[in-house]
Length: 241
Image (cartoon, rainbow, N blue to C red; front, side, top):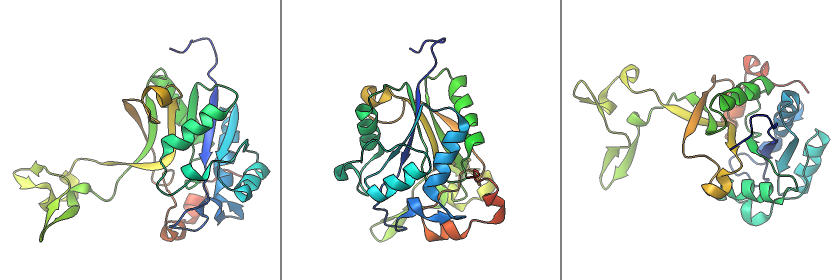
């Protein structure tokens, strides 16, 4: 249990492996003359929450870019935990264990979400504090694509992913407005106590608190169409560099 008087030691972790396949080098894709990576670094710096801002990368090129914008890259991430099938627990635990300092809390700020700015980070931190640091917090937005309208193949036929009824009608035959609201994780922000890494063998606590964000704040860039959909309104959310 954390002491109420002792300040929490918090680290920002920014994952930036180099082997992205959907968009080549997406973490350093240029947006308004700066790589995506730079906006997460700048937002973390401007929030004034973090003892250290660490970029986890397997690339010397990315390391130089991260350091240019004010983050630390104290070591490179091993290739064996930098593939497209590596999971977050591997690189987070590797980083936390390898750092000389011990941190109570870690944030994950992914570079593919440049619109999560310092104000958003501080709002999420206030949610985490509200629950007395007990539970993980995850950024979410309301989904525009509903799983009740999704299907999987079953032999020659299809079956719905989500079952349920409204007024005796299956969800897949209902209007969107009567379906349960669905929250989609948007890869913008995650907060957890470092203790979950050893206790739960994952990056989250057993219970997760939602941090609901606007569509703009939660805009994640994974496909080239995501990049093309960025308009002037969204650009106003970018942290100034």
